[in-house]
Length: 162
Image 1 (cartoon, rainbow, N blue to C red):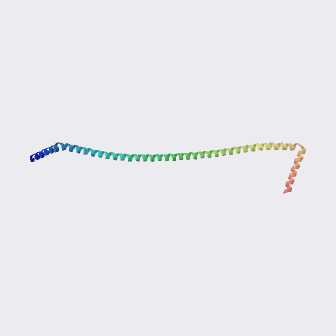
Image 2 (cartoon, rainbow, N blue to C red):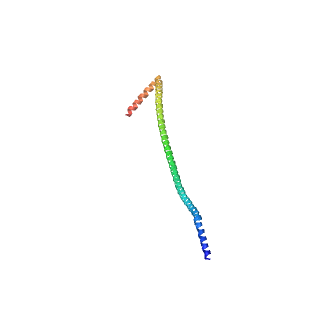
Image 3 (tube, rainbow, N blue to C red):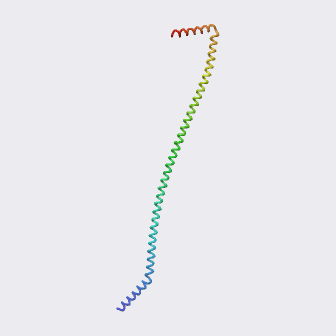
């Protein structure tokens, strides 16, 4: 019985030695290799997460910058459009004012010309009419007498008023 126990202990020690010598090192290497792989995967995952977070932050910043730029461009475009519209309105108003003044000047010139022409024409007609009337008046003796009498009467009325 003791010999059996010793034999069993020796067999167990041999099995343990064989396991420790030939089985444990490959298992240990395999476990260490697997641990390294897991650690590498964890590290890769951490780096990928950091890159993802960095890329997301850059994306959000780029989107925000693009929105800000778009808003600025829209605002600039609106301001430019308003400025251009104001300039065009001002130029149109200036042109209207210039044309109005020019029209008024032309109208005044035309009016002055018409007045000059009418005065000249009226003067000529008045002279013609007066000369015809004077001729008619002076053609008859009776008319001459009446004309002189009328003139004298007017002179005496003028004198009596004063």
